[in-house]
Length: 378
Image 1 (spheres, rainbow, N blue to C red):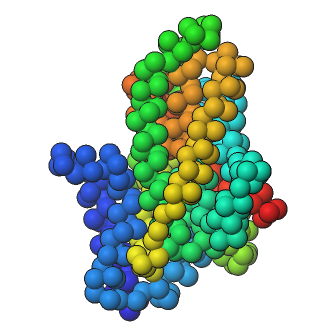
Image 2: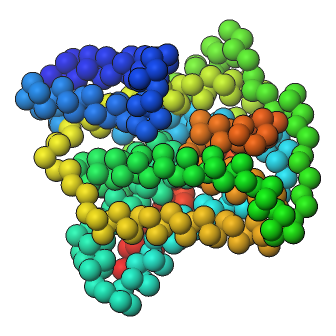
Image 3: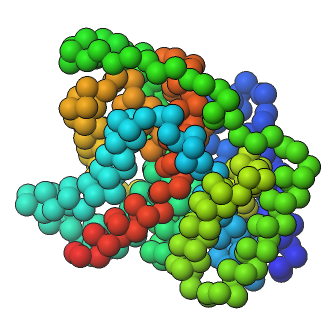
């Protein structure tokens, strides 16, 4: 069974990469709404469902939690460079952090407000334990798939609830991306309305370029990564402490080891995430999937609240309103959609969007832990 599971996961990774790189026009339209990584979760589930296979207890799940997720964390965290981050400036970072803070704290606050009018949401979110699905949403919105998967494990989110949240999350984020495309095109008009005259910063390409794929840096990055994972496994068996350890080590090695290959780290982190999603899909049961309209309303209010907080902060900082959709997509969309939305306004800002998205990837897990703590107060 283990060999079959490994073959299915490998097939899924190859299939997802092929789907993501496909030039087929029909498939591109599908991917506008359903990101390729969602197929990493669904393909194994479809195969196991159609052929009535049970891979829910294979050793691969243990390997994923002990080695693959920590490896993905190490890779993502090591991609952030403090030197590159400085070119963004303080105000956009404050705006970005305010958006992250809103995502992490608004859900429990919204629940408190709803409880003043009805007990339905208290039953839905707390008593039925749907809050365990909302915590991975924080990871997905701020940190992307890596944080989402880590928080799923930390909060022990059931598979059926996780798939429900995954589908709901992808639908809402894709709609949000379209709205942000429209908003950034109107940012100059919004600046005029709020009497904001903020200059467009110049971009110095040399200061933000990642290391190239030299053979020496590739070998050193891979060897050091393997050694760190092995060492970390001996130091602690706690999943939480592994995540904290590899997050800190990733930050240090990415910033203070000159031969570290940041571009390779991002690619390896991306491949690891696809593998993790595929392994999760091995134990997915489609019969457990259901979406409550009350849950949809709750998440929508949460999402709009995040935007209003960022709009308020940008106005107070007298910051160019184009930064609102950029920072919002860096929080919610990640490293692919943030620069895409940014390019609709000014292509020279794209590297700034990428750096904010990397900052989002780095911090998502910890914001999710804050949300988890707040929900547990209920």
